Length: 375
Image 1: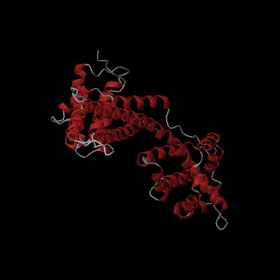
Image 2 (image 1 turned 60 degrees about the vertical axis):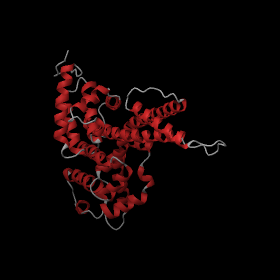
Image 3 (image 1 turned 30 degrees about the vertical axis):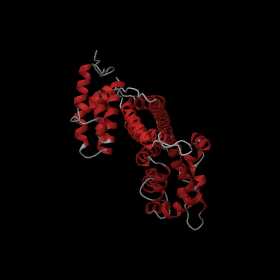
Image 4 (image 1 turned 135 degrees about the horizontal axis):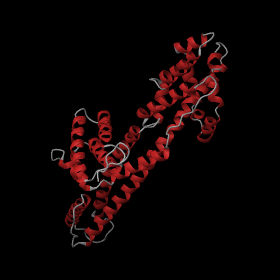
C-alpha cells in the first residue's frame, strides 16, 4: 500500500528530472540566441561576423543575468533585446510544459501500480491454465488451487483487467516459457503438486513462495517487469506488499483485492502541493539553504541533496499538520537511500538549523492534533 514515503520518493525523482529538464531548456535558450546571431547566408549584403559575435556575447550575458533573477538594463541594440526576450520566453514555456508533464506523470505512474498488482495476480491464473493443460504430470493441486479459483471469480478484478487489458495477452510465449522453466522447475512447486492433502497453511505458503521468489524475486519474470516499469526497484516492494495482503486475506474461498491508497484524492493533493511548492519555493528559502551550507551557492550542491533540502523546506512550510521532526526524519531516510554516504549527517544538520531559524521567524507554523501552533 502507498505511504507518504513512497510518494516523497516519486516526487523527488520527478523533481530531479525537472531540474535536468531545466538544464536542457537553458541550453535550448542559448542555442536560440546563438542562432539569432549567425551570419545570414542568404543575404546579398556582406555580414559583419565580428559585430554578430559581440552581439551574441552581450545577449548571452543579459540572458544569464535574467535567468539568475538579477535586474538587467536593456541594450541600446533592439536586436539583442529581442533575442534575449525570445530566449527567455522559450525557456519559460518549456519549463512550464515540463512541470505540467512531470506532475501528471507522477499521478499516472502511481495509478499504473494498481494495474501491475492486478496483472501479477492474473499471472498466477495464466500459470494455472497452463498447468491444467498439462497431460504428463498431474498439476491439479495448483490448477484447482482455491486461491487461483478466487482470483478467477473475483468480479472486481475481472472488471479491472477487462478495462485496462491483461498485459499477458501480448506475452503468451513468455508466460509459457516462465511456466516451463521457472514454475515447473521449482522444488517447492513440485512438492506442493505431489502432496495429497495440503493444509490451508500449505496452500497460502506456496502462493506466497511463487510470488515472492519466482515472480517478484530474482529471475526472468522480475527482469520482464523491470523492463516494463522504469521505477520497478521501488514499485516492486509495493506490489509485493499488496499481493502479500491479498494472500493473507484469503479465507479458503474468497480474497480481498487491496486498494493502493486509502484516500487517493488526499494523496493526489499531497503530490500536487509538494511537487509544485518545491518548484516554486521562494528565493529567500534557497538563500537560507546557501547560508547554511558552508557558504556554498545552492547550485553547487549535489543535485540530489539540493532537491531533498528544497522538498523538506517546502513540506515544513506547506503542511502545518506534519511535525517538523517527522519531515526531517523522512528526508534523512531519502538521503540514506538516494544520496552519498556523507550526505545523511550533512542534511540532518542543515535541516535542523534551518527549521529552528524558520520557527523563530514564523515561516513554519504547525497546528493540529499533537502539535503546537506557532502564533
